[in-house]
Length: 342
View 1 (cartoon, rainbow, N blue to C red):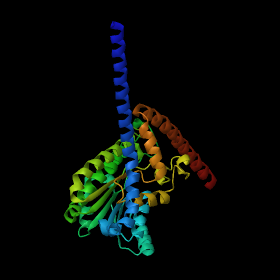
View 2 (view 1 turned 90 degrees about the vertical axis):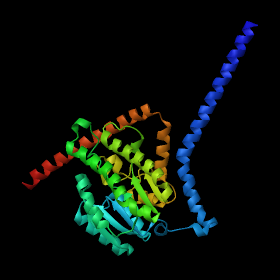
View 3 (view 1 turned 90 degrees about the horizontal axis):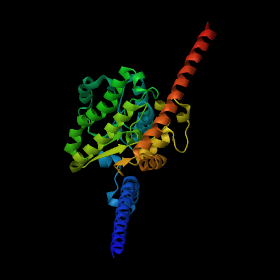
């Protein structure tokens, strides 16, 4: 009889464990599916909505406003984002560091898309002193879309002790400071109009600590947390807050490695990537911007953090070797050039 009772208890315990594991598994699947399929569902819904509810279809200008501000807008994703918005009839304010480039991009956009442009030369690495002038320059412009794109990356992956102090300050001031202060600066007008969009460009680096890119990865984790927090704060005012988390894209930011400068199915060129990213605006509040990036991001989230950390260490260590090899090659090329010209 005692043996029967023990067997019965053992069986019941086994059933309880199975049930608990099943519940945990189902919950994990639901959570993963929500995080990774929600964006796709929202995009499909937005694409189909005009066919079933045509009165709800709006252009970006109608939905958010006719003016956009894009930071870091003379190269890479920022420049292409400005072009994509201009192609949709949005007037653009370009903010970047170099006046010559700003004038060239502004003229190019005006001539090609026949929209209004304005440019503001500002170096976000200088910290808080630049913002009063930016605020004055933007006074009277009803900004409906803010694209916080400006960012500073390592010159190449490297150990924290080898990174110049000035570069570390630049990453903090640009990657964290600009997204915070530009949002605060333009927020009041959006709240008063009860419409607007804030697009914060983060990075897949937000997912886990990034050895050999420790500060860059940490600043992108800040962007992610900041964006998700203010999304809830601003929801009652009808303001869209979108987090964009790209993986690798062929831009100057990755020119330290030839492997990252070759466009392929996993690493799109900047035009292809940005066209896809802008398409998601107003359709989903969180995206990687590109389908293959979404696949990479989803699979990374399935991997335990300790393993992601090891993978990141190995990957960035290899990219760091690429960086130092490139530096050595550039040095040799410079020496050869000097010898040839003497």
